[in-house]
Length: 225
Image: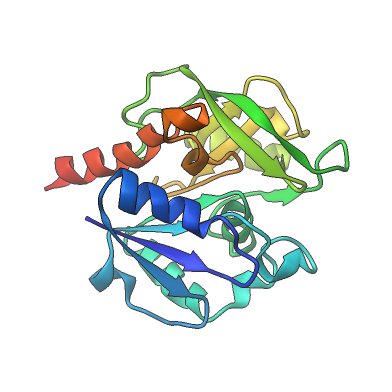
């Protein structure tokens, strides 16, 4: 099993993700530059779009990254069922690219928030959450200024009906509609979330609750063999 991690100008969490996949999980991992146009389907099993400030968050977070060369490869990988995980800025990029519904706007407080937060597992029937328990409360850190997840009433009903809501905040810390912290696409092969699972994978840094997300992907692949 192989992971790929995208590097945009301004990404700053790719090394955290690399540490988890390569050192904690012991899996082969490749870093891909935003100017490349690789055939991911022949190279990797899972793709991570990490957090940070791609292209300095100019215009809107993720708005410039969605036009990068590598997005063609990302969309092709998604189209054919490749697993994609977008964390924080990665989530913002996925919404800007219309690979996930909704939009991320300024936090309700209009300031950057960096703290530990509790999340509720809403949907365990995804490749990313099959090792969690339904309604389980877990802990992950957040670090964002534009994490306020917005959906119209019509869109909210649609993601609820399609069971696309995966994580919710136990308290609404940034203004997100329905306390949503993470959603997947209808096909369940793409997940975006604002909290950082890669920063909660070792007990030495306070929590291992994020490790189950990565392990769930591996379990899902083994079940498909």
